[in-house]
Image 1 (cartoon, rainbow, N blue to C red):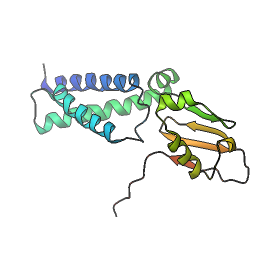
Image 2: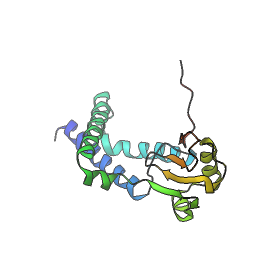
Image 3: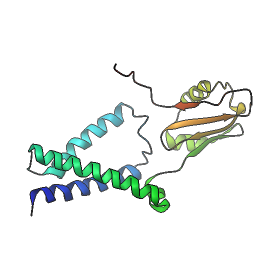
Length: 168
């Protein structure tokens, strides 16, 4: 078999495995990576490298594997955009954390969102008490959107991940 076709097929298999593994383990977003998540990603990338390129450690072998991953990612995004069924299979849905001031503790626990983190999101939106939250939603990208019942408050968007300063 052509070594680059072999790399392509191996990369396809690893990509599919990673999508399924991430979906099954419930990691619905990566905008809030903590230290454990970063270590896991680094170790997984190292573990699957040989599975993709085999004995071929050449520059072209690495570029072939990377190219396949970029192409697969591009195609998957196109398919997800066009097919609601595929999108629902791969992506998860937003979760309601607070509705009309009532906290859904079960969902908070399932998502691993602490009380402190929820309060921080509320403060970012200028809200002090849970009872003032009309709706708090954990978005699929890791953001917490909050709508207050107070029409005078400006609605803002809270991003769970700490923003890194851009190098200029």
